[in-house]
Length: 296
Ligand code: PHE
Ligand code: CO
Image (tube, rainbow, N blue to C red):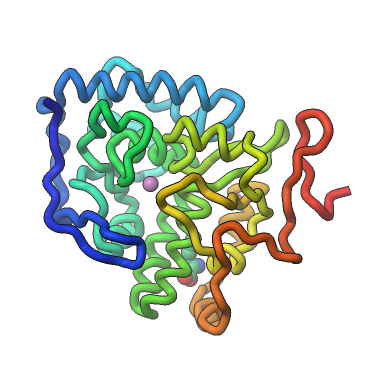
């Protein structure tokens, strides 16, 4: 047996039936992890470290190494927190799972990152429909050490608290931004397109699909376009958005979004797989290179 989460209830939302958990912050019950739990961590950790060489962005790889995570055992939040506290000041807190939006935003706005304390079962190694410890720790925590990204996450949380006051539509717009950057973002680096999104780096299949499959669109980052774009939670993404740098992300999201929400309310949403005339589409050039239309 492995350690099991305690669901509170299920809630019907526009994204389907999602589990809702208690909002309580809980101490990581490290001693209760079973051998299966540690083995699941080891399998996923080794596999992803291999897959991500040449695929994840350099900030992800470098920062992950600074934590000293190993396949030997599930890391202790306490140990990771010492590193975080000494660098960007973020703190990991244990939770049962997905939190209500406002609770989640409030944590981020205060540099607290909620991490699901339990890990998936052995039969869920390749796919689980909700975030678990592997996704949260392996996928999200490394970039919390990157100063600019660490600031972005906090600003996002503060923006979320504000959007919550604006209304449900504003929240939909802002959630799409999180989805297409924090969870499924790609970045153009000197050596090609690389992954920084946590939903990709914690999945072997999507790590390969996002960069190597001819199927999905890869489109240059455009804040308004992203906030209008629907997404899928049950399949690989049909579209990925590519930033040039974390600085670009900070700059684009710096302004007050209040007028943006008003403009967006008058515009229709864009289906997940559509390509627009105005999109800068990345294509694989000759050799290893990626070219965006408009590049010469
Ligand atoms: N600047 C945005 C606002 O005023 C908040 C935000 C910052 C959103 C960073 C996302 C990322 O609402
Ligand atoms: Co996530």
